[in-house]
Length: 343
Ligand code: PEP
Ligand code: MN
Image (tube, rainbow, N blue to C red; front, side, top):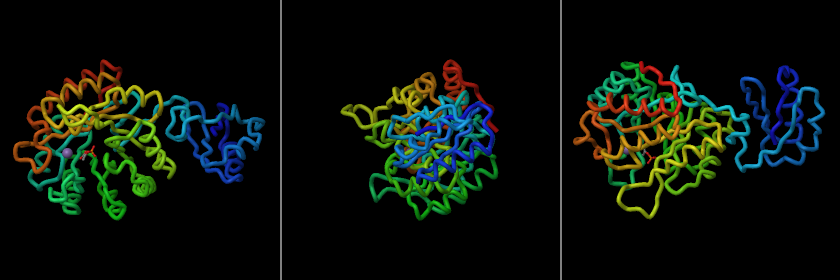
C-alpha cells in the first residue's frame, strides 16, 4: 500500500501517518521526492492498512495499492521520480551517466595501481576490481581476498576514484564495506537472500547484477530485499542472460534497460564485458546500452589483458579506454544524459 502525502505535509503529519501504519504491524518506508512524500507500507498487512482510513487524514492525498510484487522498487513508489545514487560526488541515475572501469580482479599491487591511474587519467568515474571472485571452476584463481581489499584501498587513496568491489559471502560483508564505496552483488548471488539482507543492512550503495537466468521481476524482488533494510541506494545491472545462442557467451538483454525504466525508479547500468566474453563486442554493446538510456556502464579494462589472470580476452586495453569513453559518452548524450567529469 502506498500513502501519497499532500504537498506541504509537515514532518509531524508524516510521523503521525508512519505511526499509524506501523500500529497495524506494517513497516513504513518514507520516500521524500522533490514535491511529495510517499509512505510505502510493506509487509503483508494491506487489509489492515486499508482499514485505517488514512484517506481522511488532512495531510494525505490518497492511498493506493501497489500492484507489483515488489513495492519499494516499483516506479510507482517514487511517483515516477528516478533514484539518483551519489557516490562521493559521482551520480548514477536520472540525467547522470557514469562509467565504472577497471580490471576483472585485483592481481598485484603494480597492475592495480597502473590500472587505477589509467582509469583516472582517461576520465572513468569509479574503479572496479574484484578481491573475491566467483569462478566457475574451483581450481581457477579465486581472488586475493583481504590482500586485494588493501590494494583497492591504496588505489583509491592514490587516485581518488571510489571503489566498486564484490562481496560473495555474508562473513566478508564487514571487511568489504570498509573499503567498497559500492558493494557489488554478482550475478551468481542475485538470489542469495541472506547476503542481500546483510548488504542492505550495511548501508553502502549496492550494485546488483542480474542473475544468469533471472527474469526482471526476480531481479526487482532481489532489489527489494536490500531496499527493505532501509538502504535506498541500489543500482541494477544487466550483464547478459543464458539463451540458446552459442556464438557468444551471454545474450545482452538491451531491452531490459527501457523495460526496467518503466518498472522501477532505480538506476540501470550495463556490463558489456561479461555478456560479450570478447573484446571486439564490448564497444558496440556499450554504445547500444548508452543509446538505450542506461545510466552507466561497468566495463573491464586492463593495462595488459594478454597477461591478465582472468577474463583477459574481454578486457579492453587501457590505452584505448579514453577514446572508447568519449564515444560511449556521445551515445549517452544522444539519450539525453549529462556527462560528468572524472576526478
Ligand atoms: C564481475 O563483474 O566481476 C563478475 C563476475 O560479473 P557477473 O557476476 O556478472 O558474472
Ligand atoms: Mn571478470
